[in-house]
Length: 310
Image 1 (cartoon, rainbow, N blue to C red):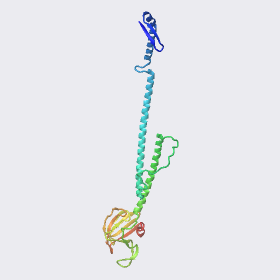
Image 2 (image 1 turned 30 degrees about the horizontal axis):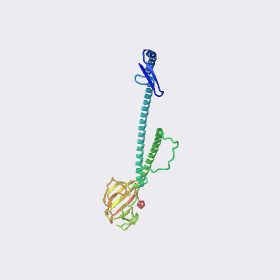
Image 3 (image 1 turned 90 degrees about the vertical axis):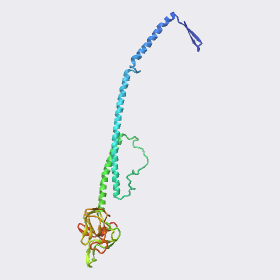
């Protein structure tokens, strides 16, 4: 048998004769080739793992490294979750502080009679300015954030304590204004008799008048000139239907000649509250309210108190 090989590029042909003599001459070369291929195949099998393409020791080292990295990643994720939870708790605490400060600020604004538009605690304060670069140009890390929150919480705690003191002072000041007599005991009307010496309207003799008389239409409301506790309410000789209020700090006020009493002994009354209706009961010549101010048990001229709010 002959095998003819043709080369078109070179324009040549080769003829291989396959007979018994030629086959025997090629046999050693074929055996050597088969031996080399078998050796390579065996070496590949000995180097690869059971079903992989890499050596077992390399695969094992990589598997260990992957396991370490998975554990480190899990620990980092857990730490990040703990940090985020801690940060959320701190933020919640700061929000509680801010809510309390807003409430205290709103109360003080109301106590001090400040225009709420000037101090609106429902809106953030107006701030601004040109943009400037950071000091080191580096973003804040978690430790920096936690440190800032610590400082902010301390500042909020200090401000809350200061605002509580200020609120107490404002309340005390307001209370002092509320319990100190000031203003008229009627809304309108006019003064018919002052404090001190006068001619008695019944006897015509010179006498001392311990209060000031305010006249107005019968049935007009009689108003408390300060907050306090009613200590007497009823018919008293000469005063007719009388209201007596204790305001503390030694102050007591009296309102006489009423036609009807609107409060009773033991009631708490506020400044400006209607306590009676004007009348002419007791020793009186017509509808009016007899107004007295006592300080530490002694009558004093009410004029300085009725003029205090004018």
